[in-house]
Length: 156
Image (cartoon, rainbow, N blue to C red; front, side, top):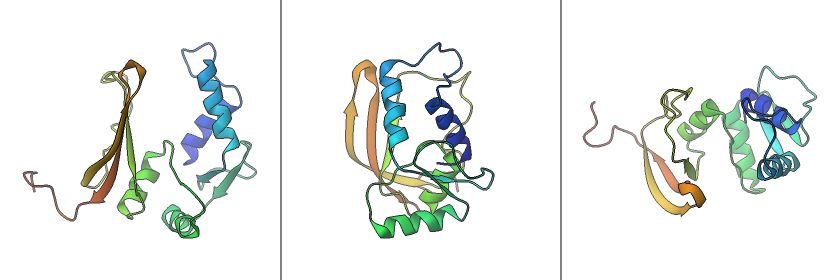
């Protein structure tokens, strides 16, 4: 994760509740607790050590080089949370093996802050898994392939 995601998530771990919410639901609290126990890598040039959130390692160098080294070590599954610019750079570098998209049955046209795919390269997605959860939430998993040229029919 990057610095902004770290600040947000470590705040949740410290008990800060999102605006408009009085307290965490039990499943949200369990999710934050599980994430607190997991080893985490934070890519940032603005944060200072020591990081207060448990099990975090701060990396100040190039994220692409660091992730490439982590993948070569092969010590388990790596995933990102938030950190849109980090995700974009890892995808461009060919380091993304799986692309998971969570779709919620709501459109935040008036309140959404950032279109998450702005700045991404063109990517072909091969669906490899999908699930639908209660409430119509869907999780779709793809194998991405960065395209060398615009997709057919796209304006050049």
